[in-house]
Structure formats: C-alpha cells, structure tokens
Length: 64
Image 1 (cartoon, one colour):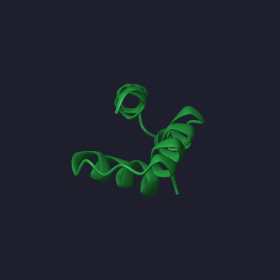
Image 2 (spheres, helix red, strand yellow):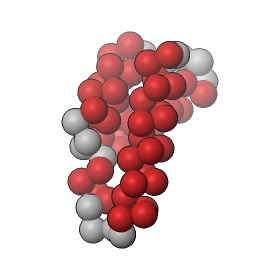
Image 3 (cartoon, one colour):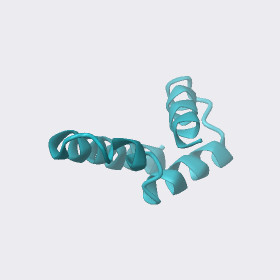
C-alpha cells in the first residue's frame, strides 16, 4: 500500500493536483517506515539511500 500512495502522491504533485488525503497518507506511511520494510534485505548502502530519498520526498510533500 505504501508504494501506491507514494507513487500516487508523486504523480499528483507533478500534475499540481495533489489531494490532501493522499498527501497526508503518504507522509504518514513514510514516517512509519512502511516502504523501508521492502529494503531491509538490501545492503546497508542501498537501504540508507532509500531512507534518504524518502526523507527528502516527505519534505517535498510537507512543503507542497
């Protein structure tokens, strides 16, 4: 579910039609680390890179 909301919020942001509920849900999911569970089996470098990307994306959502 996290990938759906993160992807949807990204698309909506690019189209400048981000729905508030989609934005809030994506932020909540990122804060809970929902997407990171998929990266736990990756090596540490990739995991940390994904974590950084999600943190930066969350900031974009907050400031949108």
